[in-house]
Length: 209
Image (cartoon, rainbow, N blue to C red; front, side):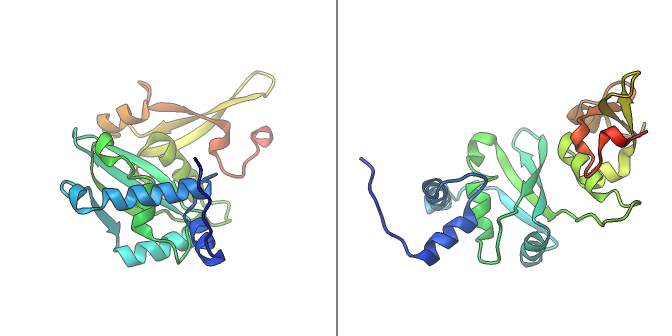
């Protein structure tokens, strides 16, 4: 049967800082318990190694400021995955490693994760010629690193009906794109990919000529 426990306001605020999405307090506590159990002596063998760019302290400070990070996961089968961590609720008092083990790296054994490399993603500037947010969004969509998108992304165009109704964006990538990246992103034979209309930040598709 459910048991009611009392906690101080300070502890409750700390739990709030560790919440992800619509986590309940119970879910946060459960993730913390999982993290402690996974990091115990019995589970330390083979635990994924973590690399923070440029170092752990600097990464945490940048994450607090920018609220988003790139996480490159290396898997036991030789493959990798690139995901974005939305850390909008991460605070200076938040425990970085506890958040990772109870979030992105949760069930790392089942996922076959052997190591992870983390770097804070840049923030875009409110300039017409700045496409940082677009490149970050594309990187999250194709599961490449931001550096790979910066190197191989060429352009995007709006595809619309004859009467101007927008369908989707068509992104084009360089012919020099490695085959492995093409496969990960699902590029077609023309090195192109359909992107959702919402992929372009702060742009109204209806106003594009």
